[in-house]
Length: 113
Image (tube, rainbow, N blue to C red; front, side, top):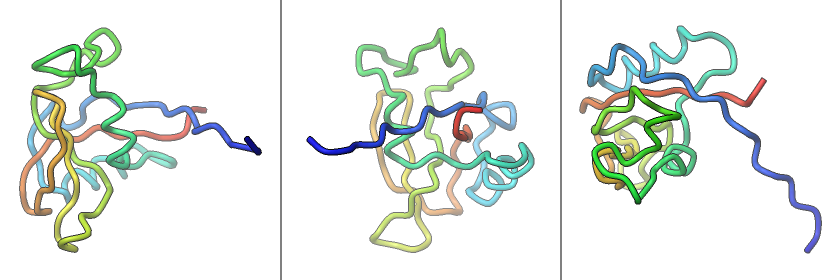
């Protein structure tokens, strides 16, 4: 099979900004305020938290009790428009593209310390 480096374990922040829906610029500023190493997750990373056995929110609420049944920003750009990013919906566990001027919740991640 060859050498395969396992994916790094991620540490996740709580939902930032008291769960308010914010623009991408506001989300990026909130993440930057957390300090070194924190960033918006990729769409793949954030979608990996979705639990399709749950609904509203579609996530393990013991591990992530403050998750809203709402859209959350990722740092992954949409290939169809430079002014759009992928978002993950924790109400039902789907993915969509949002323009950066739209509003969504924000959660950050970083490599485990």
